[in-house]
Image (cartoon, rainbow, N blue to C red; front, side, top):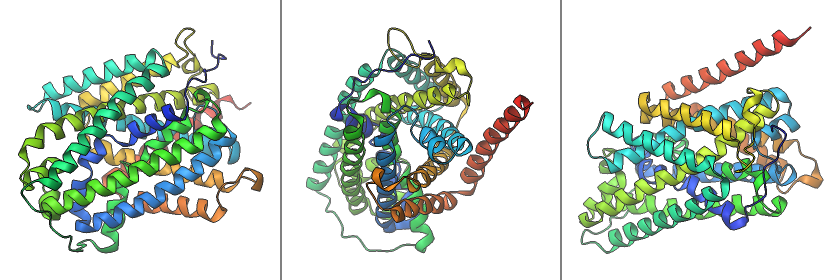
Length: 416
């Protein structure tokens, strides 16, 4: 069963939607507040920095995935181009970082749909994880269909929020470029905002399930990222112009604060609906991507080989899906949203630094972008990683070190 392959069922439109549903998640409804706290209106500069580095990462991922269209993304690319240890580091960083992202999305969903805090929210988050885990278990085409619905609702909600804010009685204020944290504040804001961009990797991890991958994967990755960059820039500018950086920074729900400041309180339910649906869409796609990276790692014995099993009817890595659903369920019952976001950002930035390094080694016939752009992407990822809050950086580095130590122990036991 472990040798069974996945089926190529997804076209370019499906892949773009899966990428959009991964990126247009809780980040667009939550990330502007912490970014405003560290950079003020400079968060727009941070958004530009994050977008440029995200584009470099997307270019590297597209260039690699077009040549190696298999499940696993940078885990596979790192093994092929840099060696087993680099591949393992990328795969491990992705799995643990995105598992934390799954928990963050589930907790964000619960925070918007349940007014009361505490265990009620956690149980609602647990229910979302179990339902969407079951959806992924039954097949990727079901995931793509549901993602289309969730993305459509999210985009419609954001359109109503933006139009309602622009037409509200409270006038939008011109931005004054005050950056309290200076260049470091802009970089830290970029690191925080990068959390909201990182979903395009889901497309590369689905390499065995898209049709005509050499054409579909690059087009889908860059297309999804381009749409999201424009959307985030418009939403960020609108929120800052409506509420101002100080009021935005003080809020746990920045878009709600923006519509209230603009005198459009009737939009609050729309914000809640959009945030809840976006969180579900991101959670759905994240679960699909993590499961397929676990499948690739299990095929190479970097995770238990039993996780490489593919369901004979649904063509899904069902054991990996079940395990990750259980781990995410445990995380939503015990974890903290703020820590989960920072931890996830660190893991994802490590993952993309390795992707850029792998793309740097590709020969000229396989290249679509110059080598200096890959070097720039790797340096940018590492720079943003070290500007994240210290607890997140230390926790991320510690968990990656634990994974590497476990692999060292395993390798030492099988040597003659």
